[in-house]
Length: 273
Image (cartoon, rainbow, N blue to C red; front, side):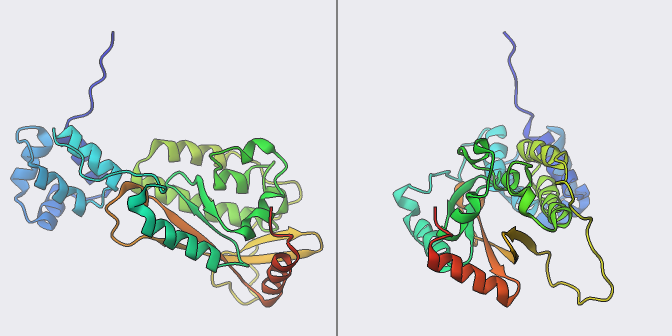
């Protein structure tokens, strides 16, 4: 039987330091420790204390989930809990999420986890899910990036598909670099291979028009085209793994016509499942 051993704490810290493009001296100065001590930790000649692991992880902006992994590798118990959003102790956070989602109507808003799986959404999102042709994409856990770019998802309705795909892939690529998450890396590879819908145009850069303030999502619904810009909201200073990995994606109309169309959809019930 083969036994798999986790990498030692020193090599894990070195990997995170190199990922953040810090030299040993850079990190030592940031953490206010000697470069020699850091070198001993990385080489395995010194065992870091629990406090030292957390200090270095803080300066390397290691995600909470991975901080727990570092503590385990160093021989310490994890300190950050991971609870379901339905856990009573997260009731205040769940209430805040529901208030934001509901309060954002008639505009779409949704909550996703670190892998872009859908956790919650408001009524305005349901109408867009109804456009999805491939039922497999709607089976939980629903991945909203896959849903957006898959040929059987919303891809056929996205007018500026190449531009929107480039925006999403850039965000995902940045997330992969920040977290070193292999599942996100696999998702990036998958989404990058998706073909553009037939007839989709390349990104437009018209020097004669006013530059956009953000990359919009342009959706064709019948004879109308909705233009939406998005914002991302995260919880401040979370100490729970679930909350640290949760993001709220809220969409706003980029023009008055879109705002009116979304109000009409909500009023007629067309935006509800």
